[in-house]
Amino acid sequence: MSRSIARLLSTSASCSSSNSSSSNNSKPVVNTLESLVAMCKRRGFVHVSGEQFNNGLAGAFDYGPLGTQLKRHIADAWWRAFVERRGDVHGVDTPVLLHPRVWQLAGHVEHFADAVVECRHCGASSRADHVVGAAGDALDDAALAAHIVAHRASLACAHCGRKDAFGDKPPTRRNLMFDTHVGAAAAGLRTYLRPETAQGVFATAKHVMYTLRALPPFGLGQIGRAFRNEIAPGHFLFRMREFEQCELEYFCTQADLPAQLHYWIEFTEAFLTEQLGIPSARLRRRPHRTADDVQPTDDDSFVNSAHYARRGGADLEFRFAFGWSELCGIANRGTFDTERHNITADDGSLLHVVEPSLGLDRLVLAVLDACWRPRLSLPAVGGVDPSGDASIQRDILTLPAQLAPYKFAVLPIRKRDDMLDVARALQRRLMQHARTDMDVTTSIGKRYRRQDEIGTPVCVTIDEQSLLDSTVTLRDRDTTKQIRLTTDQLLDRVKLGSAFTF
Ligand code: GAP
Image (cartoon, rainbow, N blue to C red; front, side, top):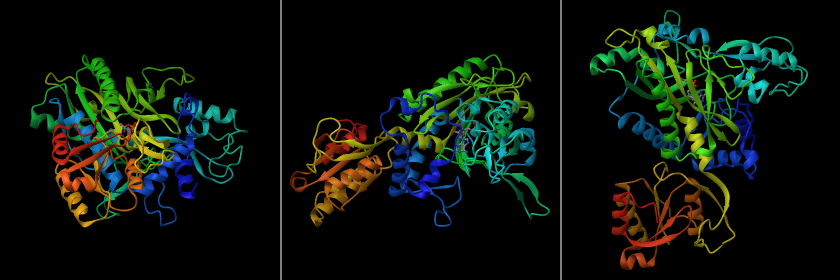
């Protein structure tokens, strides 16, 4: 394993390993994520930003051309489902920099913090819940402190590896917001880079209600960057310091709240499975433990929630290659924010808020993780690999067609001018409907393999016969099944949206 990949994977995360993939998946867990990270770098999906400078900044990543396409397709799917196709939801786009008063009102200045312990030997900071392990995200500060004292002899520092690392000192809380100055540093206004996109929505909601004459229930959706000075970024795209969120703030009356909470949890689950192709067997709900719904702290079927949350919300966890962990959350924010921004119904009663909040980069990671099939033997279903070598193992990214960076790859069998002309003309026609790659390098078998690895659903091969009768071969990524069609038939299928099933 290269040093940079090891670093990306090694950082502890508050993932629970209960029912983890190791128990019902015979593939080695670490290798799956390791090979995925390596592929992402090799093929231009994602890699560590500024790697050339002492391995880059932890928790910051560059999306390459393929990763950018994939992320955009996931964001588009969210926008379509949560905003575009709904009459009751509207889109907004608010700034990263908000007036500092917003963050005081939101409680982030006081509460947006992690409990941190420092190693007595090397001085490095660790999140107290990570030190405790799988159940750490279910414990409050007092329970975390008690656990650390009770197990002090065996608890090791993740950085230097030495035991009895934390002694008896209770964890301290460290705020996660990046602060900055607006204007000249000395005289300027001190504020923060937003750690959630939601607060921009609350700050603008009254104005939007006025301009649209919106009555509850209605929602405001936004996609944008968020910044958190995480103590322990890690697990690749799982915990970053700069990331994107897709958030919906749905405003409703108190009477409507239970039904809306139920609806948005189900809606978000259906989005993950039906639009992003995430298998339901790899999803589970973990209800929020809140101040008004106190559960015993040893019940880890609940997860601790944010300071603004009220009873009834839940995290949706995904079984990542490193174990179960939060993919997204649907919070009951109650009147926490509407009280502070005076967002009311016509009768003056405060509106309640249900908030499905999905991290876009975490969705990218979950989709890649769910679709990555390293070293799958050929042929998966019927068909023989055209390279003639039935023993070859393929790495396949089984992305749903609507998410794939390229929908088609046009592959002329030979690098001859007449074939290249036909291939280029077909690529141009296909590009009017869907992003299409063209590859003329190396053997056809290797080119298929490359397209399988980046998730291209259909390869279109141009051969001698194509020059005579305008037919081409379509090859399905997952089954390797092939059919022959005229280019006009192919274009008809593309227009009808039926080019991906044969
Ligand atoms: N407005 C609510 C909110 O921000 P959150 O649970 O703190 O709630 C929502 O974050 C989602 O944002 C998470 O479920 C996760 O998908 C994503 N997220 C949070 N912190 C992240 C990080 N450091 N890196 C990547 N994604 C993150």
